[in-house]
Image (cartoon, rainbow, N blue to C red; front, side):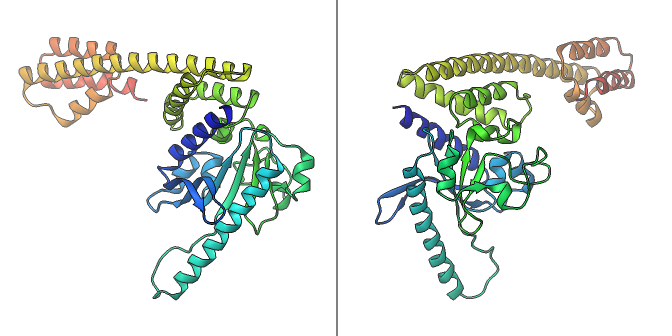
Length: 328
């Protein structure tokens, strides 16, 4: 049940996060072998800008070409590696077939077909097993030592292993990733302390962070999964309690923000109505000033200023003085 629940969450997380960037399918069948790739990212949509990918951190950089994702709840096993390689082999052969078909078609402008890469996501792995399968640190394979400035310099972080550069086959050991925002989305799929630290980091994300809202929605879905199947282990109970705390905080904050925004909009409507009764149509600049008044105190001060203003010019000057102080 633990494995099944984690699979559901991992697939939902990856699919939900990647859908804004391009087409995503789940349970892609590998013919003849009755194997299924957990998550297939078919390529970045042409409408997606490079900065949109960057907002997704390291996950965004991983999907700069088609990717297959195989998330596991248990530590890396030989069977995981062998099964994943079988899936990647078929996928690469299919890519060659499609590329050959495309070469026979009339010449036309289209982006090149890039070969897929496969990433195993595992909570932890032994160095012995990685070496046994010829998996080396990606940083080392690409000729640079581990670098704390990996993100800024567009290098590979610690925790990423590859078996050379030709295959496009790699393992991401989640508990070895640097603990920073850029790896947050992947560390959420970890286990134990790795996952708990990632959840706590979600909690501390600024309210305007583009990752916060989609991840919180997914945590809400994960909360439902845990409710349907009660937690069996201590680790699961800790995660469940933390998710419950996040959900309650998020729900209360959203409710309060919604109530506050409703009050703000009500005062703006009242201010506009009062202006029209006293001075006629609102000038565009006045309407813009009202939108910049973002607290109840400022809008109430605006109403007071409108009441005592002797002319439309006096009222406009008063609102203009109030609004710049509140710009974000």
